[in-house]
Image: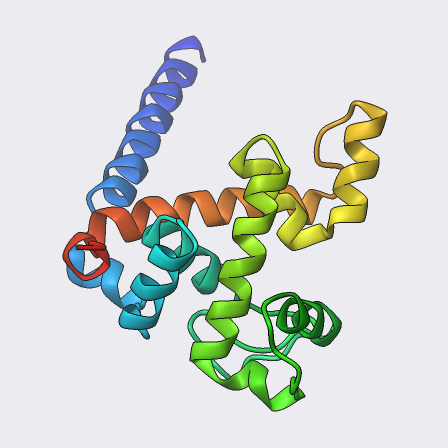
Length: 183
């Protein structure tokens, strides 16, 4: 029985190692199929305009909409960066716009511009990337309450969101280095 348990443990360790190898050694073509990149000129341009890493911006877009410009959430968020209309209207006003209409959010150029501005604002407001991403996902009010209470991210779905963005950022850095190079 003891030998059987030992063999089982060895097989389990080998299986875990094999899975880790496959995940870490996925071919580039597979990564490109799984993590598409569209609108790379828009991503590079607004990343530069708002002092963001293009890989981070691509990762947020991927996590939010999988690069679907027409994406809509059940919460009412729209477009590539899944902005709520009231948030986008406020961004438009703060950045000199006065003719915001809902259809602006399905325009990749405007959506990424507004989303980039918002992400830069969150990064400037909070002390680290994970907190800024949590605020992008769960809202600044929730993050501010958590910080006042001295606790971390309280929503499991927000913790998952932050992890997904950070994982995707690494994939975009590894897979699309040439396309997302800001120079």
